[in-house]
Amino acid sequence: MDGRQRERYFARRSGWLQVWLLLSFVGAGVALQSAGGDPAAKLHTFALLHLCGFVFRVFSASTLALQPDIEIASERRNMRQSVAAIRTALGTAEFGVAAYLALLMFGTHIAVPFLTPYMLRDLHLDYATYAALTAVPIVIKALLFPALHPLSQRVGMRKILIWSAAGVVTTPALWVVLDTVPGLVLVQALSGLAWGGLEFASFQLLLSSARPDCRVEFLSIASALSSTTQLVGGLGAGMLRTHLGWSYATLFMLSSLGRGLALMWIIGALPQRMRTEMPRLFLRVISLRPGPGTLQRPIVHDEPTPPASSKTGVPGVQGEPRAHG
Image (cartoon, helix red, strand yellow):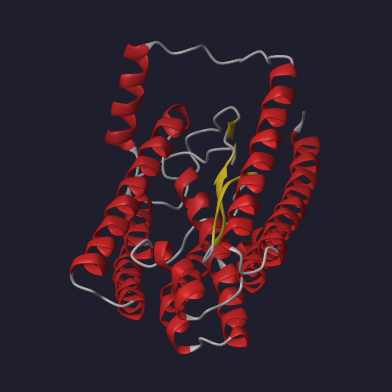
């Protein structure tokens, strides 16, 4: 597909994906709620939902297997070439944004694993209400994302990143303060706006932080770094909860503090003026969380490298990569 066809395809794909994700998640919440207070009925409903998920995944894998394989223009790399590409990424890429995202994920996962038990146990929400609250950021992000590309060209990527990160910082604290259903709807809407802007800006800046010949390796390193800090943050918060008896509210406040420290660091590290002429992002949904909504990753498609005279706007990176992520 050429660029225009690709944009239309991924735009339609993203829209339908968000619609079906929303319908399936809310439907699952309604199904659990309709099971009533009978533990056996809830267990059977959970089993049925997992069975449906298994069947649909098998169907999806089968349809993918039936698709004809595509020719890969670039040469396949052997182990030595892959190691060399990783070394190139470590030696030439800018890791400022990647390090910030790793620190942010550490602070974020002090709170995210405990939002579900907080809503269901402490606030005594039913499954339908919980599902509806979780669906709010999904809807907000689906509506917001198409507008972020023209907005970034108007106000700049740095402002989008910082203001979105500021919203991410305040979200855990607001879970404690606004603990009614209407208040949580507002917090979840803010969460969708904040995480949507943060994902858009951070993906764009990550794509501009490495040379095209090692971009995939760089994104893999950045993802591994963020995954590690997520694990450490969640395990650390679990130990504080289990062994020291910290409340959910205390963990949420600690999460806001950790996110705020990451934000303060990136504000000083980012240049004042950053490139805004960036490619449109194509995203795939990889999971769903009660706070941020959908977690998405860019689909990377590298085109020929342009002349080395242009600059990315991220310090230390030469050339302007034409990547669609």
